[in-house]
Amino acid sequence: MNPERWQQIDRLFHSALERNGGERAAFLAQACLGDERLRQEIDSLLASHDQAASFIETPADDAAAGLMAERHSRLRPGTMVNRYKILDLLGEGGMGEVYLAQDMRLGRKVALKLLSTYLSSDGERLHRFEQEARAASTLSHANVCVVHEVGEAKDGRHYIVM
Image (tube, rainbow, N blue to C red; front, side):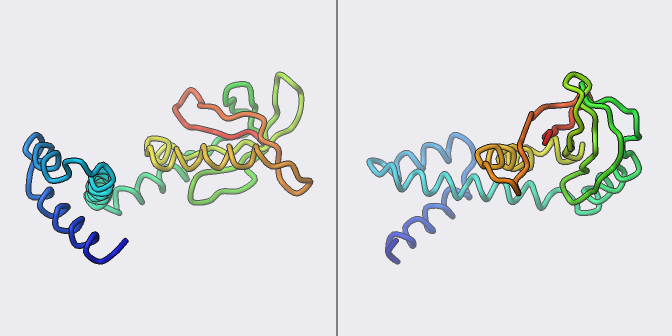
């Protein structure tokens, strides 16, 4: 992208930010008339700006409180997550927990990775979680786990079974 194009995008983006709803749409339709790529660039910047604003509006204390509350609500051995019986906690991280579980239908032990409740309601995190499962499912190597299932528990938490 050349400097002149970037200046044009920057100017139109900031002008669009000063407008709301229908006024913004009409402004962009006129300003980008015949240049679909320009419109896509500005729409992308506006979407990122809106997403960043909503991120900043969520206080870090609220996010931390949600995650800390979940640490006290780990699944106990014997708890059922759909057809999987929790046997033990294997580990935990920023996205959730991984449990050793028993597949009650097939009678095999599996690893069940549960996305935290707090993050299951975050569309972007959920998308990343599902991307992780898709990426792993395309690989076939002795050192890469096999993905058996991706699902959602009755409590709304999403999981990957490996």
